[in-house]
Length: 226
Picture 1 (cartoon, rainbow, N blue to C red):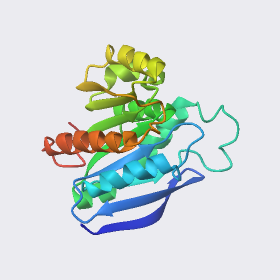
Picture 2 (tube, rainbow, N blue to C red):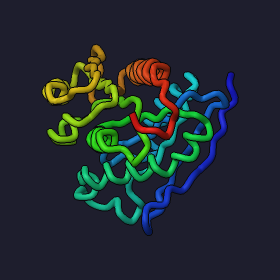
Picture 3 (cartoon, helix red, strand yellow):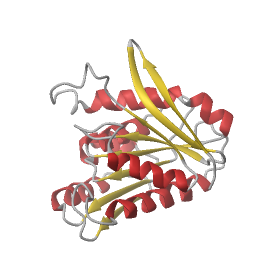
Picture 4 (cartoon, one colour):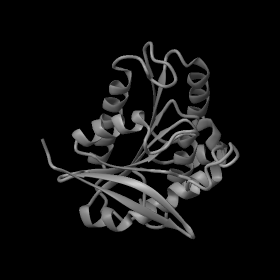
């Protein structure tokens, strides 16, 4: 098995320090930043299982908290999509040097409200950077807003459980606004949290395939805009 380097990192955004867990296979082709949903964190077992699958597929992962502990109180911050999108964008800028040094493509793996933040951040990435692929797991991509959905250029895969009809419907409606390459993948029998046996593994494999496929088709030097 390929050697994977792991370390805890601090992402400094103004006076806020966000903690993150970085895992980077030796020959990684890309780095996936995770944007979790409300009431979740980088310690989420679902996120960690998905990250482990991506690592085994040769992809680096950065799991980090979008809010500092002192901010993560009540629901208002957890649903502040503009703030969460800005945090994800800033975190992306913080790994620019690593992406350039290792020639890594960049992607977002998101869930729930984090999907809206990922759409916003991918639609307007940091200067001289781009996001090459986005994956949403049971995500509320609709909360990103009409402007961000229309502006999004990164190929986007939306994975939703069959037993999560409201989110299936919301994702289907959101695709109508997207001008980028997009796909809605419905996992048979899976609920919103993909707790059924084998469901999360299927999500990880679908996500990994999407990232690997689109990272392989991007040939412009990393660090330059399209």
